[in-house]
Image 1: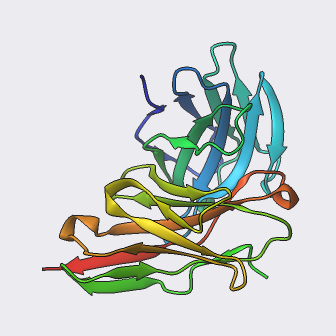
Image 2: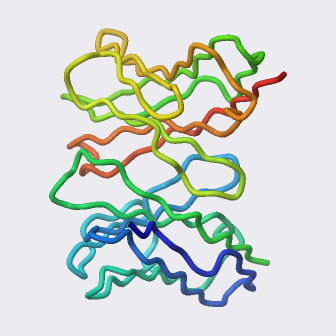
Length: 114
Length: 114
């Protein structure tokens, strides 16, 4: 069973730039969620994708966008980066038909915006 | 009110002693409750969950948690702490009023000293 993998592991960007983070879900999982974890805080829900469509969104501006592909992998795109976007970005996969099953997380991408 | 509260930023315990990491929740209806652990520079690992039934839930690595509906709490416990248990612990809740997304507490650092 392949777990959730994220790339890259670390990334440094400049304010105003754009970034794309990638996630491969655990085999058999059809739902992907993205979370932002700022330093010293708990993960905050960004959005969830199911069947290539956004299916729930947290309190994040439109410059945070995503995609899900037919193989259930996903991308998180952030435009016009701000210093406060510096955080660990976590991807988690799950099986939508089983809402009580736990999310399976990747190791995250550490984004630093300077 | 916060949906999930972890009142302690840090818990210190001696190796071999019992440990408790506290969590309270604030949702209407019946919540699904989870505990996750995060080691440095890693994603979140699932420990245990409460869905329904027995109030004492057993999970991975010897951890257990007690669901108390009257006190709206879901404290994480372990009878005998290990130094390797030192990590960041997150309580999380999933409920209909949050669109069934996973909402995390701010986290508690557990330090086990030998």
